[in-house]
Length: 88
Image (cartoon, rainbow, N blue to C red; front, side, top):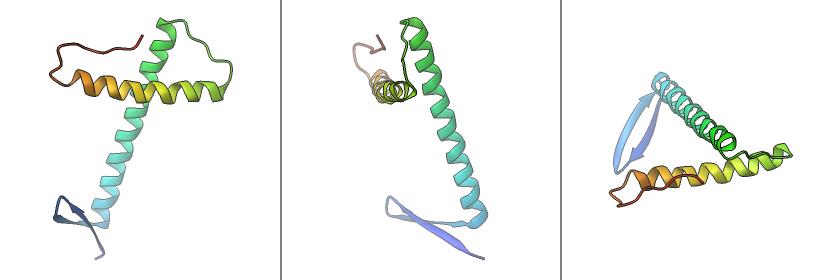
């Protein structure tokens, strides 16, 4: 049997190949879901604020900025701050 191993916070974790495949599939599914959630929020933002982009490159550029700002907003709003952030 072949094992893979990772060191996480000074702890060695050993995975079998099937566990690694399962872990990878789970991580990939999470990444796809996260991407879909951000793109859904971006599409809602475009509709709400009547935005339009003339090229696919500009759309991608705006989406990347939105995704970064969206992550910052989520992180901030999860804190105990006295105010909330949002897109505008």
